[in-house]
Length: 228
Image (tube, rainbow, N blue to C red; front, side, top):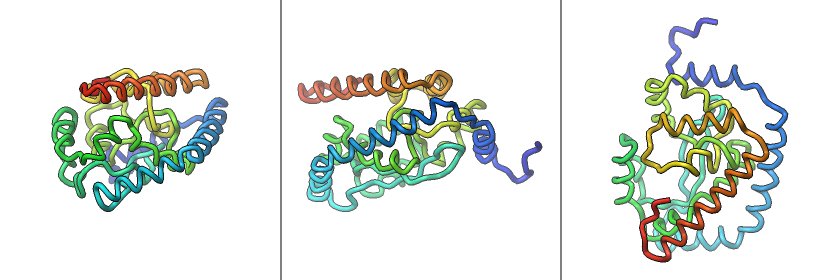
């Protein structure tokens, strides 16, 4: 089928992801695990979530939650939630930047309480709501901003393939690579997870993420840079 003449590259990739999405039996199991784990985690961490929300409100003001648009499965746009760790309107200032330059400029925007939340990755906890809603999975490619999606579609012909599954709270690439690695290298790990996804791999990534967070917390407690 010929694409519409007015269709953008990002729209074409989103359409391809929607057409190519062929659910496997394991996807039903993974979705059930997502719902069960996210629901249990939200119930168990409710006191912690409340305490963090109060701390952010007192230390950094409003808003407590960051709400950002992200590209989901088959190119659908959804609102992703996080505890706010940056100064107000930081995303507007950081919007044009990627990779190392984005990391450098982001560092200057991080609030005091935000630095603690980022070191422990507690700022990501509200994304459990996204998992319950079906916008995200516990494990999958990390969601990306729509503006970056358009750019990456032009740079990487295979990029649409990561859209055949829900984006994840954590992913294969995040357990193996630093943030500054190239998008093409991250994509290779994302596609490896998509191709090989299974219950065993799902839990392997979760355990690797937990170990990574513990190492980051330990380094933060010792006053060392969080390089893992």
